[in-house]
View 1 (cartoon, rainbow, N blue to C red):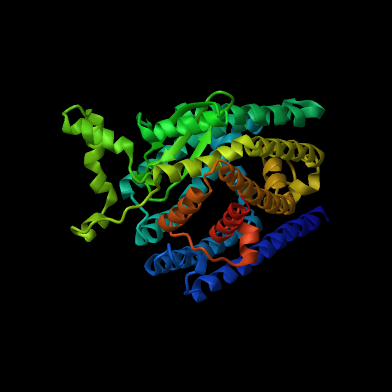
View 2 (cartoon, rainbow, N blue to C red; view 1 turned 45 degrees about the horizontal axis):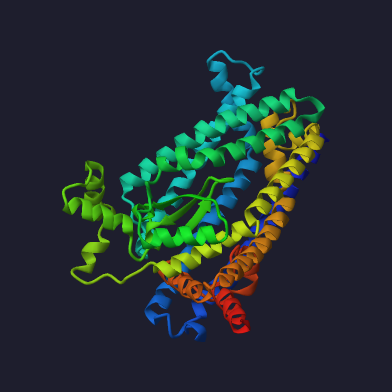
Length: 476
């Protein structure tokens, strides 16, 4: 009887996931129709957006939309097969066989759980590899964004895998130990543990993790640096350092962000964001004077190789200037600093921690439900890790979907508020031109289906933001 009830529970879970999947595809179909049928540039952009760029953006988004369909279908089928054929209990048995081979029996549940996590990560990495390769070396390359070589891609993937395991496996072991030894109030200790780990990772990320993957160079002295420091000081932002990250070795997409706590705030600018990169200027000047280091020389020498055939195809033609001017960069940073000044980041952290505590509390209520484990292939045991996996990923899935939608709505509200803050710094006009440039450089499509955007877009569309900024400018 319990097995039948268990099968019914798995059926309900699968049914929900397929309903969500079909809903997502319906929304994606609506957006695809927008890409296919919208051939005219919106009137607000006709004076600043070339038809060639608009058409490139349309085709790029069509390609990404089609790729997302097939990748999503595979992911959905993979999950369905895993649940129906007992992939989770199978992987748990394999993990037990591996630890048993080294003399560690079922009583070493945490060790078996860590092995399970490692094997699961290997499986997801291998099955996701073809999709990652196609996305990077077909879709992104076709539209001129990919700057990676195949060797760089695999080296980066290997580093990410190793770093992820070095962090996630000890954290998983610590969390499971707390759940096993924490008694009736383990959910409080588990939440405190994850909170400390999260804050700790944020503290060490800048100095020890991020530099493993990208080169962060302090922004040299000059007009841009002085203007950023003046802007930060004007709103009492505790700026500690300003970096330029070499994002161009992976992609020509651009971005800017800040991170850090208290008086240890860092601003990071992607080199692809800068119309004129002072880091490159400084390096070139140093090489011309014979002062460049061997590291700088090798990096500069390897640049054409990383860019691949794109430069060769251009022949001697002059490349179109991309990136933002200093004034536009300041406007973008004014928006980002608005998130800090308005407490958006703190609010997101609080919401995240409240949600984490609630999830651990509900897990504590459900963790001893035997029928739940039996439903997913564990009639005779209740491993804590399996309980976490089942409850957090499957049982909480309706709640997770609702929360994700609400956070998307909140995020859009925060984005509008940050734009308004930049407008209050007299950066409105520059922010408009920066948004247009970034949209063009990243081949963003400015037209979207309203329902697709409401469900998916954590940032308002370009036209929405421009209209809001223009409206507020007229009100001044």
